Amino acid sequence: MAGRALVVGRIDAAGLLLALAIVCWIPSHNLTLGMLYSADYLNAGVPTFLNVYGSAATRVAVSVSSVLTVVLMAAAFDLLKFSVPVSAILGAGGLGLVGLGFYGLIRPSSQAVSALYKYSSIYMLAAMLLLSFAPLI
Image (cartoon, rainbow, N blue to C red; front, side, top):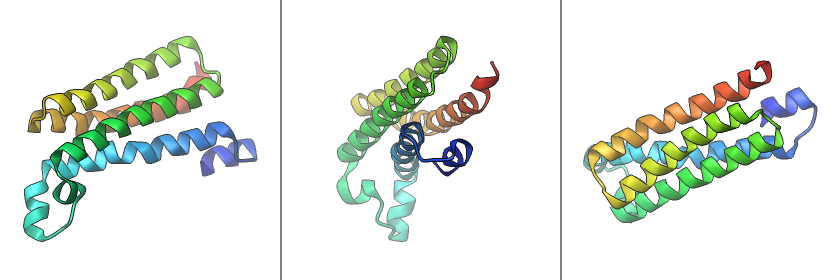
């Protein structure tokens, strides 16, 4: 949001949506990492979300986080009036994130969690690259 405010000279709705999208993305990234290494955190006595609230609640939190991230990012891109191809790329990436989130919810496995952990990073990287370079396209 600070970068957006610096560019446009004020805090605007697009900047707020982008900031919220990043905040909502954090659980889909960090909670999956906690799921992958839950035994290590438990042995170290670190109270992770998974070890406190359980696997089902963690999977729901990750899925909700993924959906909110995609919706907020899409809303920000819409406000910024990016082209249809740019929005389609973001949308396709968002479908992947939401799909993996729900797949991990319905069919929990370490492979699903690992895929979501990696994909969530790729999604946010792609969104930031689109945000940076879409105006040049």
